[in-house]
Every structure is written in structure tokens, then in C-alpha cells.
Length: 312
Image (cartoon, helix red, strand yellow):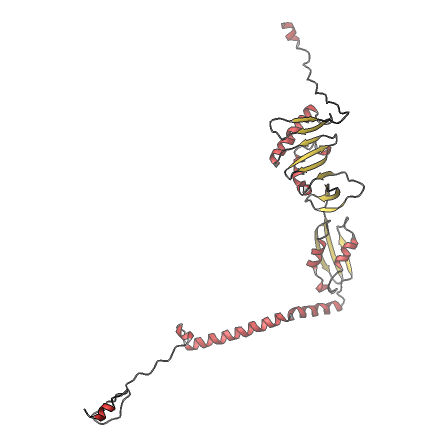
């Protein structure tokens, strides 16, 4: 082999045809790398469409975010509402319905405290929410009556008892909501005594329903230890009831039967304890001058039958 042949045996090999034709390239062409979408099996045209739509969605989201950031819809609504108000649709009157305890002036003060007097911009929900903060209002409804009137309908709470707590007296409703302080004149209502006694009026009312004859004679009801009731009667007696709604109901029903049979109330007993389901314990007052109640007279046996005397 000649030195020329050895020197030319580098990277590319050439072959010559017998006819002396031109050389043929034998190295393979490098493969172009695939794109991200093509690597997922998508056609090039589909990939371009996805890119275009993604860019368009990004532009739309950016525009919406910009509009919301600058509160353009709210500003437009405010401008329209103020324009309608200038045409005569402006809040000038408030009509109240159903209020007896709540002053009309208090409702006026809330209804007219609007950021804008234009009727389309009057905040109905906000007005109702502020009305519901008044203790006497249990429910409220606010509506517009065009062109210039706001109608306020309220349902007031009904006082059912007086709550005594820390030396203060307050009217409360059946849900225990404190309505207002009691003045010098005490209303003719049952008095609830003790912490959270106002929140348990519903259970007390259900208890007294089990003995309706006793209800008019109950003056006070003390919520003891957050667990049970002590009832105080007009004659000064105290009836101690057990814990638990069912147990207390059975106890007061049993006491009502005993009182109807033996007239326990009005005889000077200090306390009748019905917490033991098997028997009742009666305590006599130890105050000076208190007298021992007389035992109920035994029933008269009556005259013996005539036929019995003849037999004897």
C-alpha cells in the first residue's frame, strides 16, 4: 500500500465507480430534535393552534383582571344609579309597618343612613342588617316603592319574663333575648333568676305546661347550677325539681297530684323537695313565729251500711 493511500484513509471514505463517476456521500444526516407538542404526538399544525389559543386566553385573562382591579363595572353602575337618581328617583320618604315598641325615629335614622340617596343604590340588605341589631326587632323586610319611598316592615319580639341577674332586671323574650331594662314598675311576669336562666325559658315553659294548674301560682324560677329549676310560689313555698327534662316533668306532675289531693300549697311549708323519685321531702320554716302546718284530716269513714249493723 502506498503512502498516499494511507494518508487519505481519514474520516470520509470514497468509492470510485468503474466508469470514473463522482464520489457518493455515505454519512447519515443528523435527525432534527422534536418540539414539546410533537413529542406528545401532536401534529405541527395542531401544536401551533394550541399555542395561539393559549396566548389569546392569557391576553383575555389579563384584560379582565385589569378591569376588575380598577373597579370599572362598579364605577359604571354607580354612575348609572346616580343618573337615575337625578331624574327624580331619590329616597325622600320611609314608610314603617308593624313597629310598636321600636320608635319610628330609630327606623328613620337607619333607613336614611345611605351612602347614596339614589333609589337604585339604596342598600336594602345593609339596611335590614342594621335594623336587626335593634333588640326589639325579630324580623325585618325592606323594599323600594318607586319613585322615592322605602318600605320597612318589622316583626317585634314579645316579652314573656323578667330576668334577674346581678341585681338588674330586664325584659326577655321566649328565646332569652334581652329587650330592655325594667323600670320601677315590675310587670306581672314570671321572674327568671340566675346566670343564663333567660336562655332556658323554653324548657321552663314546657315544664309548666305539664302542670297548668300551678302556672298562675309560680312567681319566680331559679336556674340552679345550670342544671335544674327551683320554683317559688305565691305562698312562699319552694319546689325543688330534679335534673333532666323528663325527670323534672314527672316530678312536677306528681307534685300537682299531691297538691290537688292534700293541698300542700298555702299551708306554710318552706320547701317541698321532689328530687327523689321515690318520695317527697317537706321542710318546715324555722323562722320565728312560723307555725307547724296542720296535717290533713283523715277521711271520715262515714256511717256503716244498714245491712252491716243488722248482721252484727
